[in-house]
Image 1: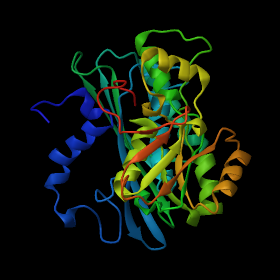
Image 2: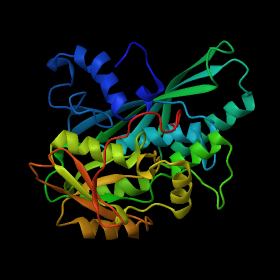
Image 3: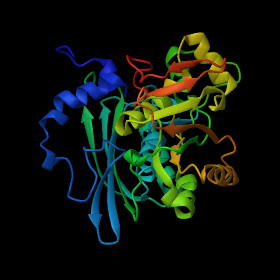
Length: 343
């Protein structure tokens, strides 16, 4: 892995997993990975879960370091609130409270800080999540590039959604178009104006996941918001955790035309770009069409069934993509720095 931390180690792909394994997970004895009966670093899911009477307390923590902090469609404050809420929802939890820790560089415009914290609070307020604590630190000028926000979220789940519960016959659903956030950030970083404009999809998924859990909870076997590493990373994590083959049809993956055109121009696969307002779901195959129609009835009109889970000795733990031209290729986990400081 080398002797230095590289940007690629924070991109969410192969290098991130290597870093986690070497500097954290290798230090943990089996008894340190979780509370008995719960979920922890043994699963590396969207959060951790602790058994309590009637269900589970679900906890998640994340840091947000997007550049620029204001981007088409949102800002780092809205991103931090949405990302925290979404991580709880992906484990089947109803989000209850959030804490934040803001580290800001000396000289950062106070008006920008007000806009950022205002967006964060407004996002939480819309979905009834309380901001119950936090911390603020100021770093001398030059010691930090702008602002970093770290959040901790707490929610309650009667039944957990854990990605390793994926099973053969399950269908894979995405709730909307992929690659929007990553493309918007990349265009902003490069100072490029794109015809038709690119906007982040950043949003809390409360209006999708809460009704879905209430109506179809037992049939949702896996859920993840495809942030760093995008859809490619999510699918590869699922395949690696379960040892199953994930067979995906590229023609069924919704990608906006302006995102597709921009990523082709930049030589980037949109399936590896972060989304910040999308869910990927592993759903019981017998209920998948019904769940899809339910998602569309909630207003997620671009939701699509993109593939299925299979048993396969030859392709165990792999993601195989049927391309738009009818061929087959292995969809690998992203590697290297695709877009730095994206979320």
